[in-house]
Image 1 (tube, rainbow, N blue to C red):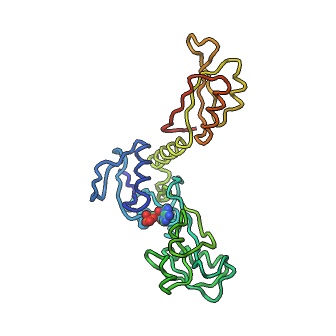
Image 2 (cartoon, rainbow, N blue to C red):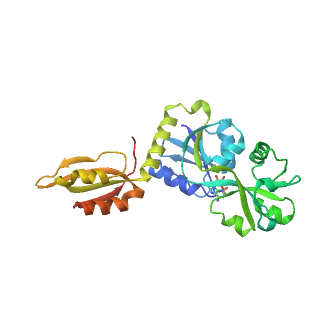
Image 3 (cartoon, helix red, strand yellow):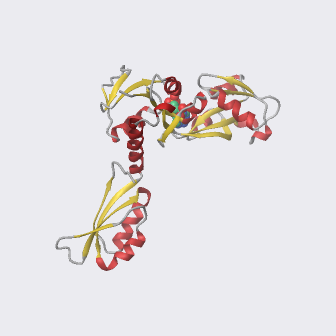
Length: 283
Ligand code: AMP
């Protein structure tokens, strides 16, 4: 059975579990202390630290993995990225003390000490900027380093910016944008089960941002309705038995546009408007 490495704690596990559930691969047999589980009988899941997942996949301890793009990049290992899972969104940023008066990289002088859990990415970033720094690798809580006097600046992950703020730091540059990714070892990326999982997860992600819309549309206002419908497919029309001047319309519409679309349909005299979620969407 192919093996997939999943994060065991922290920010990613809940979203990973929800995604796999929606894809029809529920995590079975995982008690709090369980280190392995079956994914719908198709994959064996192993639960490990998010940081270790790129190494485990690259070294063959697992065939596939789900972890942050930041950790994948930091590992420096050659891996195939199969899907951007669109959760765990964050940015790796350069931050300085709020009261430092520094607002951009160009104001950094001397050889600033940079604390980071991401020493490889930090070095590569400052090298590309042609700035000489000395990197202070830490294994967590980099944001405290400037206050302890062991670093002048930090390279750290942020999503809302609130942790930086609480710690008296402000960002001055972005090193990279990150989100969770499905990764595979190069040799397994073309296997049918890796492709099937890619398709399943992509179809769930695509479906999340769309809604299925049904409505009875007055036949004489069809053109108007078509013009007001955003989105990719359709609409599909079908006769309504005894429907008189109405036809039934089905369409897939971006979730972000559903509020306005329903109002527009109503204004066009549509009846029986129904909106549902879609579980999977494959183009
Ligand atoms: P953690 O659960 O804190 O060990 O972080 C695991 C991964 O979650 C990170 O490597 C990022 O890919 C992702 N992540 C998403 N949002 C954040 C955030 N605000 N701070 C840190 N990590 C984040």
